[in-house]
Image (cartoon, rainbow, N blue to C red; front, top):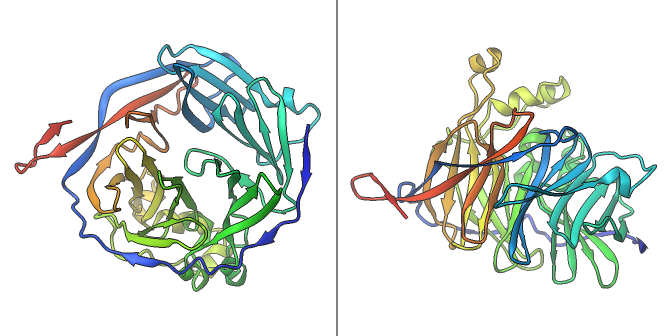
Length: 376
């Protein structure tokens, strides 16, 4: 087992400055629809439906899907096509006697599973062998899930940093960085990529400061921030573009939150009373992006505890031009999207079912001149 202690430094590039690009949006060219195709994965008696992350991957000639169950602290790995359970990985067996805090797990394949616990990152395989331990030396915690997956590319590991900065400290927010880059060759770590500049000028609260990202075929990170209509593409070095990616359902600007509301534990209420952007996903087969948007609640709906928000999917082509947007069911877990090697989109539904995990297939349809859907 290899333990690595590193001294982290903070990147000094001014990465909240971007080159803005605008392409006229075409909201009605394509539409993402919910099909009748569903897949069901039965849960064992000690498996639970509190799934923090899931991943779809190919190993050999078979397709697999993994689900990290944060209640049992285990990964359940299923053959995707037969829906049969192939393997369980219990993290408490791999780390006996360890205390866990804000544990995250994400499976890239059978050879590479990333675990974060406290300030450490572990690389393990499906046999439970610990291949590497990274002691980051940071006070930061990390988050691995579908919306901020760990990335291994060009001998570097990238991990999303959990938002832990005090949401009422603009000084600290100005200096916050969202990614941790670890060099697998020289064993050094660096914090990367600042929040857009306006976050350091007004209060938005941690929910509206949430970041999401994916990696495109150029190896660039594509980032979505909750209170920002722009999407950002960066190589974390010298390339940082921003693109018009605004929802047609956005109702005016997304206003900041009063500092007193944050101090008086009203941050959640105030955040859901505002429009917000969610995860952004990359479809490598069709070279396109899917961005989630959530419409704000009314005060009346919030008081009546009607907290399921209307949500839409924005479709952008390889140039980041919007080519479609439509509302989708509130029953679709928009944080759970997975896209396979042929561009098929899957998402969790019926998330309250304690006995099975259910996925529905989403499909893209062209819209013709008479506003009718055309099957691809």
